[in-house]
Length: 561
Image (cartoon, rainbow, N blue to C red; front, side, top):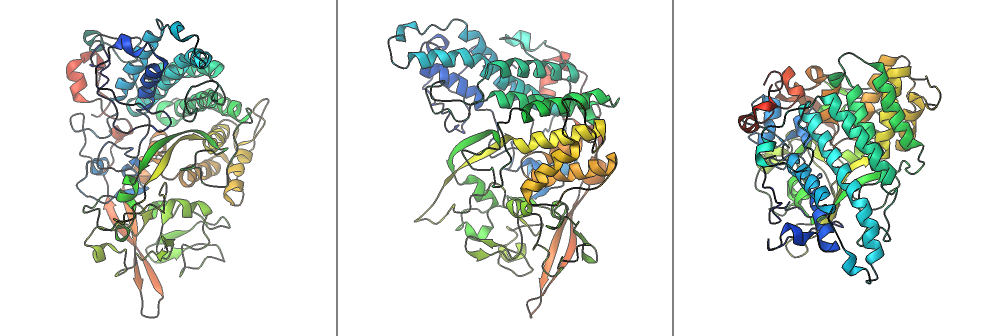
């Protein structure tokens, strides 16, 4: 919020946005110059997009945010992301601050202001001029929707937040006060409604004079509205349990469903350019960094020397049922399941198919080799000087397996990071409908029950229908589905907060030790990997102390910090 009045073109995100490429300039352009050509205007818009998700979803240690909840443990015990678990974070020593989203909002406000005086009439005789004009008419709604997205990201971290309107001077920025969370959500919803009226359902070459992939759409505006209302209805932000909030969230989700534009995909949505389930994803340039931090180390050709890596926990593994819909748990006395087909000697066989998209476990095939996380195995931590998994599991989500670190035949790949997909809409609908009507109630335009919506996702995954009755039991089923369907898509960290279940879920982090006998049989022992610290204040982030020093109107600090 304390940035220069004029956007500094030389200070841009280093992670380029494929298909929305911003070519960094020498800094020789003035603000006025940047808005005299369509190409430069497009670059300015792309700069606003550039703040969206990247591989390093947390700003520290190349860790995914799941390492801050019970789904994962980060390999380096001294990494900053560990502050989520040990309680050593504060307004001075922050984690994943993202107050920098105000830079994105500042860029959006600057862009919207500058568009008011754009005149490209000197290009009217060029063949592409009609495309320029068509896109320029839509650019304000792209910028406004992106601004709404960044406001949501800030609000779910901090609760009450400032909402800068227009371009502010440094002095103005340092006096702006916070607006209540509910008021911010209403603003986001209004912006989503407006942008949905004007943004196209699908971008085409006729609307944008570059590859149309990656622009926000009508569907994303409606999806963001759904998400904002779902959070507004959740316990953390709805302590009075206002049931009407759930109904509004359900209706917003149903509006997306009624578009009949998006469909569940039986194949993985990650790292695909075109998929009927995708609402918005961000494609990044070719890279092998994600694999560098998350491949089992023996496949890295000596390229990684530290203990980094995001490792799934036994807590998460226990959330995946058998293919027949029975629970599976690794207890102190070994594996347990009521599924008559479950084989404790082969506990990773016959599980929910989504398990194999998210997690790489002992005995699975990877790059033409068998993963060995048993004691003494090729991928066991002590075998590799402590550089392997501390939990007994490796990450598979988003991994591109053919990435290679061989010096003579290195292979990099493009990665697409999912921002929104249709399964999220169905599950938001199922959660909201259950809270308002129960599992099987429906009415008027809300003519699909919570159970029917949830079971669409289960059908797509090849899993049996959920048959439990009662709102509480069905809520537990919905919460499990959020966890397994969206493992490592940046949901669990936020879900345990909005549901306020952290004291029961965020303390004991488990892994597995596997022992292989001479005859090849294996035994599995649950191990406590880490005991974490949880405090009520952690439901919201602290406002950075540096901001409070500059702007006392941001007080009071969030409770407990």
